[in-house]
Image (tube, rainbow over all chains, first blue to last red; front, side, top):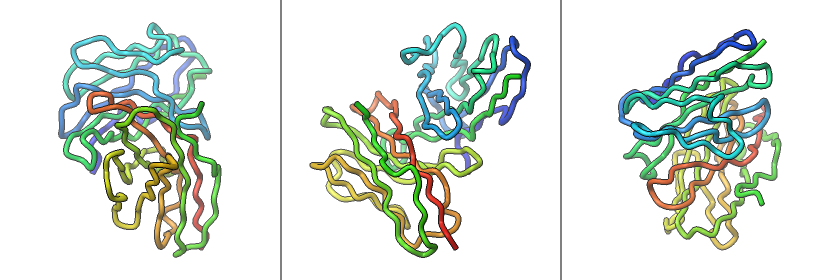
Length: 118
Length: 116
């Protein structure tokens, strides 16, 4: 079964509003989670690394003031898209490394959130 | 330079045939991990198989196997006896460095379509 959940799965909002996306590890603790963005028919691009108890680490070119990340607990990370605009419309997907898999840190992904900004 | 290269944007394969999805990578780090994920139209990323840079044997998971050729820096995914449900996007990804640096770099993906 799923080991990482995301909520909501789909959201439509008006331009200028803020949208919060939650990512939860279901049966394990994750001190680190990752947020990716995927445009239609493209690959996943890492946006930022969410760290429990400390600031997130953003990839080059990602605006940290626009994409706020909070790792509130060992099982929850949130991504808030502030003042969303149509160009922020995308598929946002989180992942968390889980020990005990084939690799010491196999990443398991949430089901993703499709954001549409009107 | 691309760290992960998938040269096949799309492939069509007859049901029950085997299929090989290509992946080459570029890294100077002696320690790395290679992953394959499947993404159906629903969007979820499903972990398929993992190969560590120090693993002596090619990884296998059911119908999935990874043809790891370290000298050529290739990590091709082989799916045996393909099924209609195998139709999806397939991404190759790499983690560089040791545990504690879990960031993944993804290739551009291959869209696999299984023909009945």
